[in-house]
Image (cartoon, rainbow, N blue to C red; front, side, top):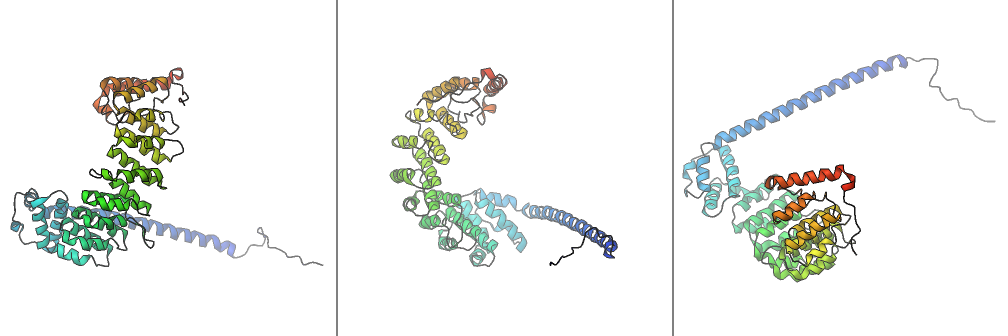
Length: 423
């Protein structure tokens, strides 16, 4: 009526030959694996030691090469000499070592000193080699070539570097953008802004790289920044809003304010808020105050509080006071720091809220540079001063703050009670 399948039992009383052989095989495999692991660890240790020795040896060799040439290079960097013939005839390896030292110095000098150092690169054929290297298959070579061309500060190489902004390697694109910033050629400011975009699956250059390059180009990037504020890409708008904080771009205030009010990207709005604070026009205080509302993103609220402190107008005091008791600890700290920088009125409000217990005493008042000794002492007595540098600048007040805080923590009855903020 049915077919019954007999399944083998794992506790079969009839042992097979494999039962005797399997343990020996497993033991052999385990032993072999252990020896392989020990050998791999040994090889890894040897490689690490060899790499360390090679690195130390290379550093010492470079130091020996540069030792007799260093005084001459420093004299050229100080613009004390104009003739570099005394470097003499160098071998290829020594030329490469000197080139690296020259590139390091070029980031620190200007004028005739920079020209003399670039002449050394020309004499060694380094600049010509860099022009060929921009077409190399190696991304490292292309990036180094962009660095060399930028270090020359010769705007004739700007078109070459602008072409490298579309390189398939992100590191090369970033180096090319930095090099254009070093050249300071604002002709390619739009290209630098566009480099932030993601194109055909290739991520753009970091926003801070593009922003630094544009800031290095000076005020001539104003029109490019104006166009960037209207770009459909939020990364481009973010960079443009950041660069608009540069002095001399106050004419962009209406557009920056419009972005702050309406942009859908919170990073862009936060950058616009910081720029509004740097521009310092008191007409934007109401807009910044509305951005402190709980419905706003945290990044926008923090940027708005910081901007109110930077503007420094008395009208910002009640707005900042309204967020001292906010549930966001970081926002309360930023608002407290902004109040501490807003003159006597702001500091009085801060001391009052501390005494009332509206502001928790563990909040750090970080910006105390402009705080008077009397107000600083009042803050310290309430345990509110844990600012950066306060321990070195006023150790007595730091100790007072620490003592007050410890007393509050150890005595619950003395701890300030949280009050509901006034509507």
